Length: 165
Image (tube, rainbow, N blue to C red; front, side, top):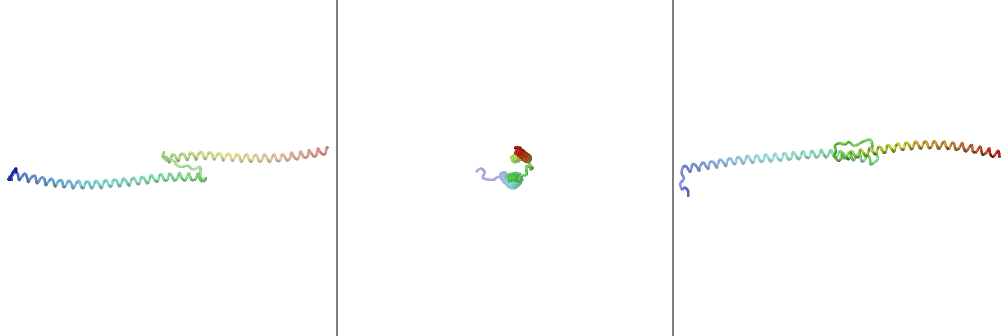
């Protein structure tokens, strides 16, 4: 073909090319090893970051769940107190934040305020009614005593009228 006989120049060039090819293969193998190591480290780092993030999310969810559960428990306790009739209308729910639970607590507190004012008014009316009842009773007793006196005088007048007749 092109050259039937190798010349020393061609042999040197060929050996240099083979040496270069061998060096390039070694460098590529070293780069491949470095890339594999980098990939493994990156993978482990990514897995670690994902695991830490998931753990943080779980912890935050538990904290949030506990906060919500406490607020719901307090709300349920107050509603149970009111519904069973044992409720202390001077106690109020603590309002923290402006979320739906805080709005529900505010609404319940306003309801308790109105209910407390209504019940206080009813109690005052009952006391007034009791006092009026006592006064009416005293007046009725006075009238009964006066009626007896009048009846006694009428009886005296009747007896006197019969004697005169």
